[in-house]
Image (cartoon, rainbow, N blue to C red):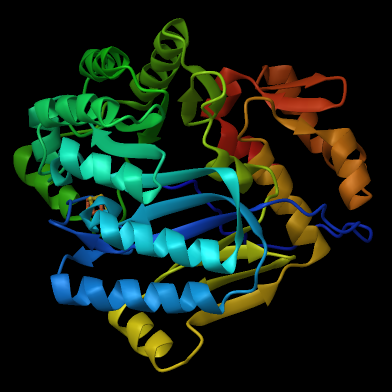
Amino acid sequence: MARPERSARPGSKPQAPSPKPQAPSSLGIYVHIPFCTAICNYCNFNRGLYDAGLKTRYVAALRTEIARAGSDAADTIFFGGGTPSLLEPDDVRDIIQSVCETFTLHTDSEITLETNPETVDRQKLERFREAGVNRLSFGVQSFQDEELKRLGRIHSAERARVAVREARAAGFDNVSLDLMMWLPGQSVQSWLRNVDALIEAGPDHASLYLLELYPNAPLKEDMARAGWSLAPDEDAADMYLRAMERLETAGLEQYEISNVAKPGRESRHNVKYWTDGQWLGFGCGAHSTYDGARWKNLPGTEEYITCVTNGGDPVIERRVMSPGERLEDALFTGLRLRRGLDLSDFTVRYGMDVWARYGDALQPFLQEGWLVREGPRLRLTRHGMLMANEVMAVFV
Ligand code: SF4
């Protein structure tokens, strides 16, 4: 399943003057569930096959890790994976309970469960809702069975449609759907049929992700064997631009490079990743960013359980970010938002005149029409979003 991209940042870091302390804001809590029923042929996430005994021990370890965290205010919980909807609703309730015992969870918190359509029915969804989940993010990926088969997905397009209706019947008023774009053998027209089907399903939020093929993905072999190819780059750009137009016409406004939502239904959890927020990740391979430091947990499910159960600390790769890295990260991620960056805010928080530092390097992108400067704001145009990596490279 897809999560917001975090970027590796090689090379030298720009040095900023001493930053002012970050204003305290409520935390996001990320809970990783590494289990799936089957492994999709393009998947590079931290996951493995579901095993009931392993799941029970994992949930116990998760609750132990959460109970050991320091108390703080939190206003979002995001169950990501893997396939979190493979958990029993009672497991989800227990984990939320652990979060409530450790953190001060706001009463109107957003609690999201990534859900695969084939893992739920109306009754199970009702029980997730009773457990405290108030937002579902369905991994639909395509509304065409042939495309789903190519990806190794085990649900059908009809199952996805029915799951959304079941979610509504179960009382969920905040439902997101993920679609993947630029699939093997996919034309602009077949992609737009998926977009239309998504609109017809009537979600409150949608995420459109470009298929990324990692070097040893089994899908690459499948493509070679079956003769499936990717549409040319110009078609991928066309897919993106036309999808965004259709979604906006349907009332789903773009608020980030890959995300659209009805007004007020933006993902509050994911917005923390793009606005210099703070979050704590629990579970194997989970990442955290808190108080100017960043760390990640042991990636293996079994090694994570053993470590936590024996009283150990599962954190690896902890490091304090330099002021330059924090600034760079905030610029890089903030530009993903449609509203872009408020440069005056950066002056206040980081003591730096961003335009004085990067203006010369950014000027060509303004001339190209990829960037717009409006008062204190700097934002990508929609065409600029297609070239986001080139623009953002200025900051790293
Ligand atoms: S369901 Fe998601 S996490 Fe699991 S194998 Fe497929 S893409 Fe990966």
